[in-house]
Length: 71
Image (cartoon, rainbow, N blue to C red):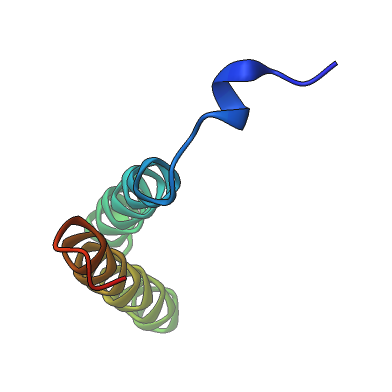
């Protein structure tokens, strides 16, 4: 059986869900980064956080485009 709420999600809805998850990942890596004292671990966490930041920007840009009808 299909969940009608899922079937009714728009592209913007899906991107907003993805955005929340990416933002949560940014916070996770930032928190772990603040707790880490080992340089190679900090470097990895910085790269992971920066990648999530890139994803957040990309998703936000796409949401704006879709909301403006340019999707």
